[in-house]
Length: 417
Ligand SMILES: Cc1ncc(COP(=O)(O)O)c(C=O)c1O
Image (tube, rainbow, N blue to C red):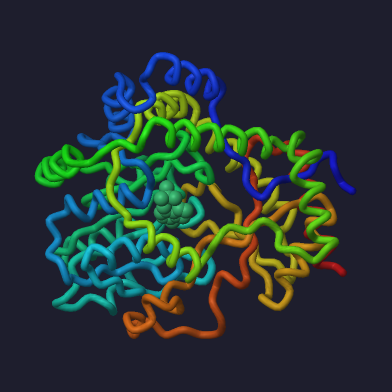
């Protein structure tokens, strides 16, 4: 069993001092409210170079806050990329909007103006431009298009915290940028999310919405934070190799499911049944955010470096597709490998046997999901859903260069066989 040098499917990027903040806030009674909240909003706004930032309890709640603050008339169509995290269009649907889905580029998985434009009509109210897997979409061109058609432009930056296009942060090109600080993203803050905007009316409405929102209970925040800290520990490669990895190997041997999270219709069912509402960001999460802001650029650079090493070692490989970098900065929050859907599980098992845990993506071809089927008329689908061909691997800087090179060799040996 490959224990040393094994690679987890995702590493939780907590900053040094995270546990100390958790214990400190619990002891001082500042888990929910405290001085870090204003400080974090100010510092995050400065870092993005945008006038207003408002925190929320998650990325999806930040999107709900964005829509509730947008002034967008109910019933309007919102154009989403068909391949995305399906909870986002579900939020729009639950709020009384109509999600419609445009195609995405098969190489970058992002939508550009060429995909969005054909869906614009008199019912269109907004576009959600998404920077998937850490790669910016053609946001300048999309912004030109939405300005021309007087549409609201929202940006989903859940995978793109710290991505810049011509020196400008994503999330500041549209009317509202939406960020996630969940444990699976590059800047986890024991959960949380935020919106960024330069629009005073939107900022005023966001303040109104938040003034009526509550903060999750102290016990709930602490429990979640401790759970995320445990995930951080278990996904340190050296700890993973002697804990979760052997459990996964045993599951593989017994033919059991490999601890996958809910995706697609199942995920949507759980989410829709959860009575989604906007909650405020907690002070403990803002404390983590302040710590993260001091190191996120260096972290992103480390992921970029590892991704470059992996891409170089896979150059020219056949049978496995690697991410293309069509549009500038890319921070590889996830590194998606593509493979023929009939071979995906076989490749995953092979990788696991060689010490590498790969993740089935949480993204879905939304136009094929149950709640959106009737709304998917606009896009022409070919073949099966995109997610069936994707395996995500982790290239975060906590993974050593040696392990990344070994990952390249494992993939090459599979492709050659
Ligand atoms: C592209 C994308 N947008 C938004 C979200 C929602 O973020 P959160 O999980 O913090 O609600 C996710 C979560 O995985 C995502 O992948």
